[in-house]
Length: 367
Ligand code: 2NL
View: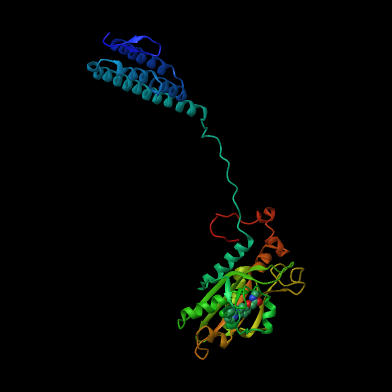
């Protein structure tokens, strides 16, 4: 005995006693670590030996009672024991992690040879199909696709198209106004006005403007949101013959090579002369059926030569150039192409209806 220290248990303990306790702790810790079967059990062992009231800490508390000359050596041994226990804890922890990983790999084994669940593919909406068809026909004739905002000013939507405020033609396009000057576009013509003003004096102008349009209408044949494609050609010497030729090709491309067209005089404020354009009935070929109400014809387009004032509003000189324009409703094309009787089917979101159309992801959206 080199000093008289008193332990908790009241035993007198000196350098040799503390060394013996460290040795015992080292052995006990090693055994406990080997026996620990989980990370939690291992943590308990760590606390038991290295924690604040652990065996090692207890021994270090007794250090003060030991002869000062022997303290460094005892401290060195204590640190060695601590480092050894820590090393064992780490090694055992790694081994337990490896065991746990292989247990989980085994338990969560996946049979990658099982057949997968194929995600059900959606279909193109008939309006998208019809829109893509119409765009394909016109772009193949050299038309460029132009787009513009859905929210328009009164000037672009109406005034530039020869419809001043209080003009009776505005009644045919019951409109959604934000303010007296801001409106949801009722047609895509404002896109063409914007295009002309941005490109003048370049020639030719040869564009289609597809997109959503809005009118305050809602019944079996009208939806408050619908889709339109308008077309505009401006160049020197454009005539009604150019309009007729382009729309003839369009009708045959879209509805088949035997399709004929018929132009009836009409009126629009933005074209002069104006025409309503019919195609021979796509169902009966012209002999008369329910779809064409026994007339043999189906109205599909409005068209005409661009009014001189509208050309001027677009920044072009009507003394130098002339142009033709047309407009058609896409829902009507879709209903004709796919034999859809009620426009509300297009907007009901019924998947039994929508699933009948061409799957998405198979090339371009064509019929
Ligand atoms: C219809 C009638 C039409 C136009 C649209 C147009 C555009 C400009 C100048 C002149 Cl920038 N005209 N568009 C012309 C005639 C008819 O649509 O019944 N659409 C469904």
